[in-house]
Length: 252
Image (cartoon, rainbow, N blue to C red; front, top):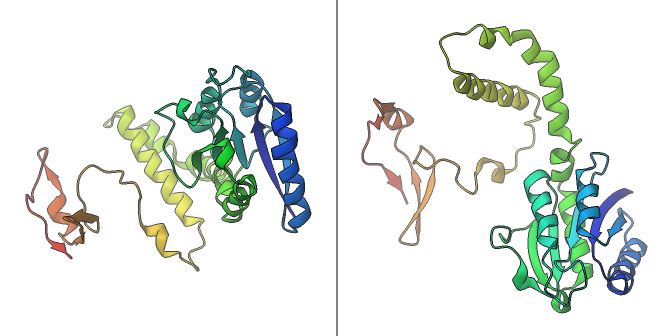
């Protein structure tokens, strides 16, 4: 049985008892694979301290926006959400009576972040979302002590440590160029450790786009029609700051 450690940031004890604790108790009785272990915190400052504590490995968070019982004028829950989004990686759902107080910069709905009106949300459905996301394995990869951290630790001590002089003694490249090179070097070593026996087709698609310019294999949308860019990669090469090719070949 796996544990789901969920942070609940809610100042109102009655809401915690009647809504969250009740639904979590029901979830734990009905689920054989996962059990929720919740940490209930009532204030912004305590929540941020808990989030900064490297010993806490959360699988998700539920956050209220008004954390001082001000009748809806307080928005300090935004600071909790900001701490999560800037420094951590787990699904976070804002459940509040004042969803219109969510900061615009934070309010980017996705499968791992959403804002709900308290009176309209199904809390059990939200708990199920945490379970579904946990079951993908993504949190085991990306959390503070996840697989990627283990790989980076291994690559640093067993690979980079034996070849770093190639960069340290290179006087032809700038520090930025060396950093970019070492990033590629690290990622290539990470790829070497991957099991490629079972590939998922979605892993080859980069969403949202990272690069600003078109490249071979990109998928584009023009006039509601999807196209694949087939122009050879060699034609996209930059020469004296400009690309050789001014037109691209698309396949619709």
